[in-house]
Image (cartoon, rainbow, N blue to C red; front, side, top):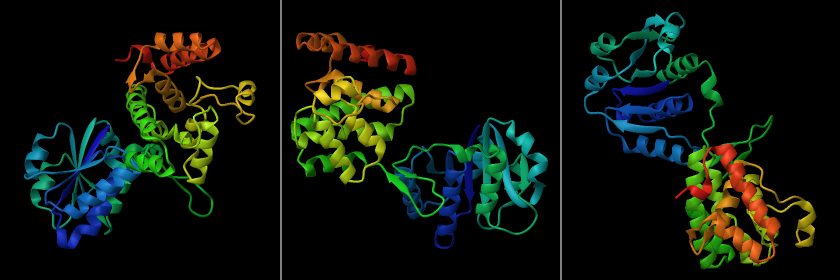
Length: 339
């Protein structure tokens, strides 16, 4: 089900705060788009900032003629008004539609809105705000499922019985700044950018978390600011913890080498006594993208396998092959054949 919202009659001087809250409620409760008939750069900037930080694909668009939008809408048009039919009496019928346009008025709504709508719907018949009306309507429409959506933003609340906890994933620009501030060589940064681009291609094909993959791929070699040895994964994790980066990023840093390093081999390499084996799809993707990038470009898996065999590391070659197969199994495509 796809839901769009039409904010009718927005007045920039009077309605800026309420209309911003309406747009944010639309986003949080499951709508994909909000249309405004009056341009307001402040509201637009607020919505864009929330989407950039908190995730999702919600957007604000402008329409010059709202009647044309309503008349051409391929789906059901719902007008929220306290004078309409009670939401509980019609929500079942409305829910059967694949595309829904919800009209929410600001100033006095013109009569055409009542006439053009397929349903005039009341969220109770007492005065209250249009923001609450939209939120209740969308919650009834989606039956609470919209509250379970994962927006995959850079900012993520960690539910807590008391206090406030939030995880913040750095943006691409912030990752590059971090790498340079801690002293990662530019050659390594260029490699990390190439790994990120390949890892993102993989992520999009299998529905992986692109925010985690982006930050993890860019920061996977942050420990190279300290050493080029395998221990750079330990040093990288230490730097990431000091910077307060999320655990998901720390795990990618720790698990990106050698197709994953099991506990028994970790000690021999001078690492801490634990497994460094990728488990999540994001960890697998970054690990494998790192394996497949040489000289800033993707190379065939067979070349990587031959390299490890020549180095006397057939066990690493086997692990790299296993990761390729695991991504095929989980995601339904062959990373080696991805152009």
